Length: 262
Ligand SMILES: [Zn+2]
Image 1 (spheres, rainbow, N blue to C red):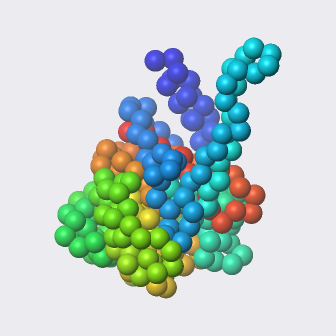
Image 2 (image 1 turned 60 degrees about the vertical axis):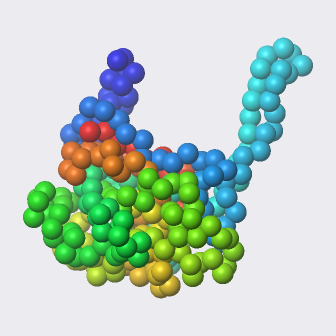
C-alpha cells in the first residue's frame, strides 16, 4: 500500500500548488478511464489509426535486453483531448490548457438508457436539470462526464461509430450520441465547469455537420475529452478526475491518460 499512499501525496501536493485548485481527492479505488492505444483503437473514419513500429527488440551486442518503439497517431483519436484551438482560433493549444481545467471533481450524467434506444440521441438541458434535481448543483470547477454507455461497444466500430466504413463518405453514416448545443450553451451560461468529457467519438453527435457544441465549449476555452472509457464504474458525484494529455507544443489536441479516484 506504500505506492498508492505516495502517489496520493504527490497528487495532493500538485493540487495544492495549483492554488486555489480543487481539494479533497478521494483516496479510495482508482479507475482508468482510458482506452488502450492499439491497432483496434477507434479513430475518425478519415484518419489513420494508431501505428506502433518496433525500432529495436532483443539482445544488444553488449549483452543486455533492449526494446523501443516509435508511434504515429492523429491528435484526435482514441481517448484524447480537444484543445480549444481545435475549433476556436486564438484559444488554448493543448500545452496551454491550464492544469486546473484538467482535474476536478467529477459529475457523471447517465443518459445510457436513452442512448441505447436512439444512437442519435442528444443530451438536453432537461437532462442536466434532472441530474441536478437528483444530485445537486454541478459545482464550479467540475469535470462533467457524459455517460452514453457507448464506451461498452469499444472497439467495435460498427456499433460504436454506426459504420465500419472508412474514408470521407463514411462520415455521413456516423451514428452516436452527443451533447445538444443548447445544453452546451446552458453549461457555459449557468455553470462554470472545468471541462466536459464523453464516452463517444465526438462531443457533437455523429450526425452533426456543424460541430456546434465543440465550437461553443472550445470558444470559451473549455477542453473536451472524447472516447472516455469505463464511465460505468464511476458514481454520479463521488469521483475526482485527473486528465493529463501529451503536452504537444502548439497541438490542437492529443492522446489523453484520464483516470479517476473515488
Ligand atoms: Zn477530438
